[in-house]
Structure formats: C-alpha cells, structure tokens
Image (cartoon, rainbow, N blue to C red; front, side, top):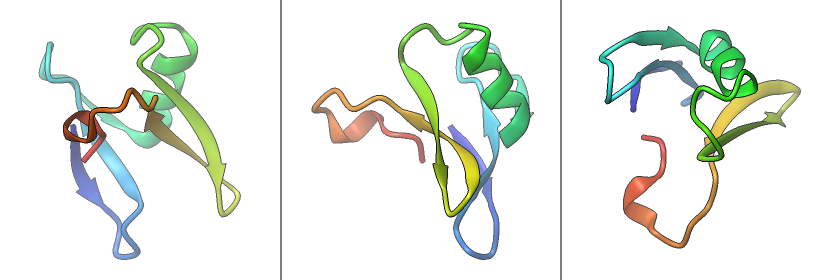
Amino acid sequence: TVIKESETGRNERFRDTRTGKEMTRNQFIKAIDKGVYGNDYYHRKINGVETPASKPDGNSRNNLG
C-alpha cells in the first residue's frame, strides 16, 4: 500500500500489508527484484525514474494506492 506520495504524486513510501514493514521506493524495487513479492509487482521507468507497479490482473481494486 502507498503511504506517502511526493508533491507531484509519485509514490515514495510503501507498507507491506502482510508484515507491516515500511519501505522507500528504492527498497520496494529491490524487494521486487529479489522476488519477495512473487509475480505481483514489477517496476518501470516513468519520466526516467524507476517506479514500482502492480501487474494488471483486471481487478481495479487491488492496484497500488
């Protein structure tokens, strides 16, 4: 879950809803790369910045946010 956004709306801090752990954007990206979140998330460059994203599954209620 996103718990902090920048003034421009970029997701900056996240909370793992299973463990309660809070992470920065970069920490979340590293966890995604290590496979901590299986195939549920990936990251992509948005305006030149790596940004975590949930993989689309057709359910709009389980997006990051």
